[in-house]
Length: 302
Image (cartoon, rainbow, N blue to C red; front, top):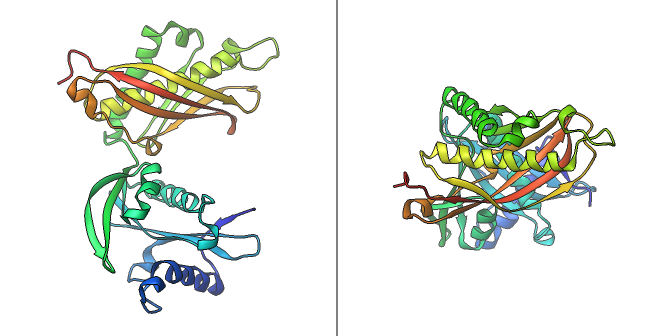
């Protein structure tokens, strides 16, 4: 199926959008038409998934709560299309909107039956929420950005670069550089020339190393952001090579895709974190690196 993801535009699309909301979220509890809308509709951001025939099969909404927080509401998927990843597709798009708005976190209220879906998407339990139609709800949240100020992140970027070149000699031979450490993303890059193979493309080992070090750098940055320390080691990893690399390669790692739990460190135990790095060449994705990193407590940890 060729799904179409967009914001409602025409009157017919808006009618179908609200109809699905009411059908899934209100009708089963004998709520009247109109109860699927509230006073924030005009200032909110709406997304829907349609079939090739134009049928609206999944919807969701995001609105700003304040300058730092946005809330997701009215997530619904047609009964016929449950289990096809459409809810995740809508949620990812709403998260992208939140990133573009510059907010730091997303909150939402979910019933117990939806808890697994949101936890899989990286949302953490926060607290009980108000019940709706007699159904218990719970609040979940997801952090989108580093908490540190951009000036601090610039300092960390220089420190991470120094750490790479001084403690991992291979990174210096590769001429690997920390391109960017911003509120939302870490980007590391490696030029083609020192990493070239006999086919005049980038050596697979260099691509793997770029993925590893970008992931390592994300764990390092996450620790810094929580004012923690630890020894970071790669426990397991795999990479999928999608296309040959014919120029500079960039490892891109998004903060909002990683929700670390470092509580074990405070108990002098090992923490684990799965990291995903997308590798690009000229804005074309050429590889996907996924690694499991372990963080070992140090003597400085309390």
